Length: 179
View 1 (cartoon, rainbow, N blue to C red):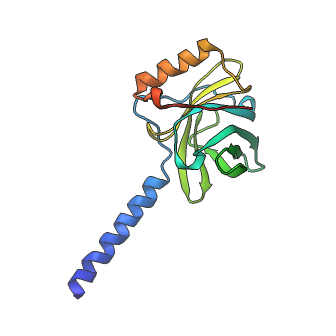
View 2: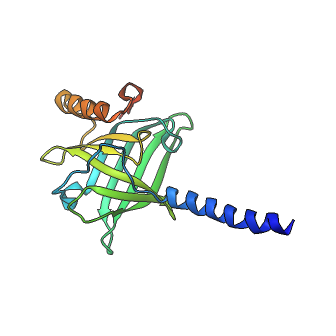
């Protein structure tokens, strides 16, 4: 029994460490590249979620917005809001985003449940910072954002083509209603 404990405890701790390390990942999908010469100040403000993949934190939500503002320590406050049309209630989640390298590369990690961090990578943005394509840590997470509740067809197609080339199943995107 002592031999089992000598092996089981270190292996268990190692596995837990690996899980924690992976949960703190700020990676991005293979082939994706974060926007360079990124202007973090121009990115701040309100964004409307135009499309996303279905996942549990935003399940059954419409009217989803993200408000980004700078914290005193240089990190970014993330205030996500949305309306759960099944439960008929508004939900809000406050988090923090930090740049992985420097503020000129749109590669961030975001956390709503510290110490768990996830990748938040702006992989395409128009020159006026009105529309953005954001990739998560894997092909399970993708968002199309706009400063307004709609997006021009040309930008939509540009973002969808880029996402498809990276391996995203864009036919599974949920197009968010704003009413």
